[in-house]
Image (cartoon, rainbow, N blue to C red; front, side):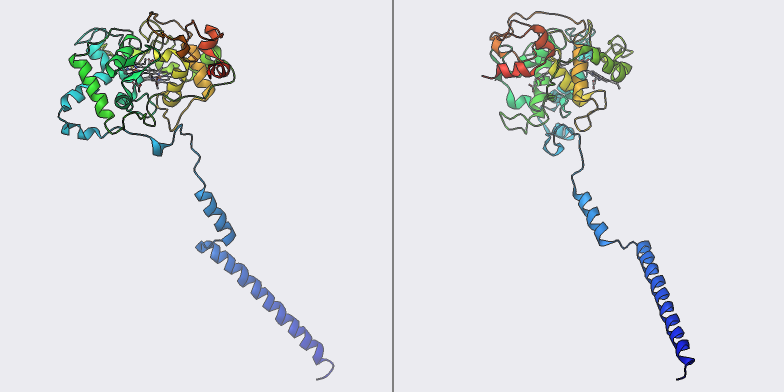
Length: 348
Ligand code: HEC
Ligand code: HEC
């Protein structure tokens, strides 16, 4: 080997290793790009994906849908010996005014509302004031009357207050049909049990009083399109009931009805209004529900005294808006809150 050949050889070696390095880099980058295209993922990323997929999906549901009781299958009603009676009962709940309203074809004993306006989907909607717990929990002693009430008395409570009307006789075909329908709805519920989703949602109480002025803003934004500027809703063309029921005024529920308590009104609208809201997808915040309840119940509606109500005044619920009371809080605070101190004072 001579003196010239040695540096040439060194240069050759250097070139060779450079080519090797470049080839290695090209192949390496090419491989990464290729794996990416065919969808092979970096194992670290993969772990992260699996984790986020198993995290629970965020839900606004007011109660767990898996625990909600549902009504029996309507398609099977014909297998019941009293199927006709049950069907007539459902029809009366859904279209009360047509049979028993101001122009009712059976009797004229109520204000034009349908039971279904407040007991949605004929009393089957979860947290839509449904009847699934009626057969299992009545008769029961109620604070309002001070004695044991059966289903007939409870139904007549809604006729006299929510429908601002008259009672139906216990043995009338109509009353028997409605009771039969409610018994059919609650057939699977064990005696004494209140099924999940029956009745009305309990909205957590606020730290402040519910505010009718804020509630008017909610009403204008969320309710006015259907229930109207004047709250009178919209009647069907043939006058047999409402497309949108009235929320106050002469044709609405009276001051002794359940919805006149703002906790009941707030709970009803939280899970059901504006129409289309459900217990799984409520639309109003808790504040909006309380405030709109305060607004609507601050407006004029029929009054009617039931002098035998609440024989024991200490049984009045926190938001019963008429004194006398067993505590020192005013009628105004019992009507609008704040309720926390009333609840604390009611605890024995
Ligand atoms: C304006 C609204 C409204 C209308 C209309 C109405 N109700 Fe009610 N009803 C209520 C409210 C509020 C309650 C109390 C719910 C609660 O306290 O959880 C109630 C409770 C009941 C209950 C007791 C439910 C239970 O589980 O304890 C029965 C039964 C009932 N209504 C039947 C009827 C019938 C039948 C009609 C039609 C003739 C009717 N209601 C119309 C608002 C209404
Ligand atoms: C898209 C139309 C629509 C909107 C908006 C709407 N409602 Fe209703 N509302 C209805 C209908 C329809 C019913 C009767 C449901 C039935 O019979 O199935 C009803 C029933 C009611 C009832 C019980 C019946 C009664 O007359 O007392 C109350 C209370 C009520 N709505 C309050 C509200 C409030 C408060 C808002 C606003 C937060 C609101 N609604 C927004 C359509 C609407």
